[in-house]
Amino acid sequence: MLVPYVDEAKLSTLLAAGHAIDEEYQRCRVFVAVAPRASTGQLAGMVAAVRGCALSRDRMFGLVSLVPYLVGVDRAAAIDAALDAIEDNGQFYFVSNNVGRLAPYLTPTELDRALAAADRAVADEKDRSNLQTRFPSLRPTAWWAEAVSAAATIKDGNLRAVTLRDLAKEAPGEHLDAVVTAAHAIRNGSARTRALAEIAPHLPETRRPEVIDAALAALLATPVRDELRYLARNVLLPLLNHDQVAAIIDTDSRKRHAGAESLAAAAPYAAPEHLAAAVAAAIAPHKLGDPLPDLPFGLRHGFPRIVEYLPASHRNLAALSAVSIRDQIGVGEHLWAQNLALVAKYLTPAQLDQVLASIDPNGPPVAVSNAIEHLAAHLDHGQLDTALTTILAIDDEEGRGLALTGIAPHLTEDHIGRLVTAVLDLHDPRVLAETLTTVLPHAPAEQQPLLAQTVLNAASTIDDPEDRAGCLLALAATQPGLHRDAALARAFTAMTALTDANAQVRMLDCLTPLVATPQHDATTIGTLEQQAP
Picture 1 (cartoon, rainbow, N blue to C red):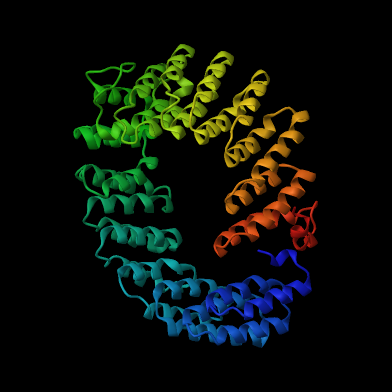
Picture 2 (cartoon, rainbow, N blue to C red; picture 1 turned 30 degrees about the vertical axis):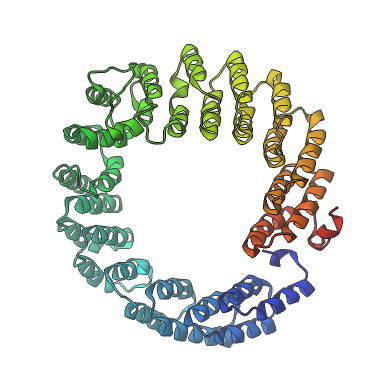
């Protein structure tokens, strides 16, 4: 984090601090950060320290991370020590990750040793699958026949499908037929569908249609309620033509609830007219434009996502029906507000008036602010006035601030004064600082310096040091000049007041790139605290 921005003397100080850390993993992390700028002597010291780590996992991590920065006999010795640690560890997750990172630097003999260690670490079918698919580019051609045969013996159908898919991505052409054959042999219809669908894009174009047809046949023959079927269907849908998608919609519609979920998933790939007919059947006896009081569960949540894929002539009425699905949604107003983002553009001005009037400013604050934000881009001047009035009636300051933030980009010049007044009326210093920082770019240029000073003053009074630092950094990221310098200095002071080391690191991650800019050279890091009031 700090390494790119400090001089050589400070780099040596950081490295010395790293050597003094008791926890070996954290010590290795410091070494990894310093390594790109370290001298040969410093690297040798780090390697020696890492080789002394008690846990093989830490030795693996440290040595493998340092190898790219070593040369000649030093690199060879570090590789040998890293391979010793890999062989000592025996935990597949850690071994396989480190073998993958080390592989580019290995000789063929060293690579064989590393892969043999990974093979010995395999504990179950999942590990075996990962081993087969993790390093195919490192394997000789003769290995492929054995790998495909091994994949075909995996008992779990879904794991076998994933393994065959990953093998297909890199398999030489002469082995693809064997991969397809192994996929056809999967008994579970959903897993077979998934395997064939995910293998198909990696086949020659002449082979794809028959494999896609087989995947579709497997899906249609699988019970709609099979727990893996939805995943297999979603993988297959992008590969199908309109007639094939229609077959899925028509088959699945025989089961009301599962069919409704399938209809929503298939909508982006369906022929619009066929989709309209399927929707009409699913909502009967109601029609598009009517309130829909008793939709199947899957359609309650999926209906708004269908609207854009219907014929253009159907979208307004469908959007009106989508707006009516409010009380049926499990998380109520929150999801309804999100759905407005999908359908608001299809509503007429009069319908938008009705939706605006239905928003209760004392409802769930986040839902209210989201609803207004999603409507705002589609409102005319007068409706934006109404929306602002609704926002001002929100009692909860956090919700009011969120709503003001959401509507700000959509307001005209005539509304900005009212917006700024509303923001300045916020009393909680954190909410005021967060909201005004976001609204600042939309305020008149001549007002921005004074408003930025207001943010600086408000943020500086926030009690929680992490919130205070966060608000000050947000201001510094958007404001050049004196306000930026003062915000950075005060953010640094707030950061030093944190008692949680992880929180300090998070803040320092945000602070450092802001300091190390053309306006702030590396020495600024050492002087921020003196600048702070």
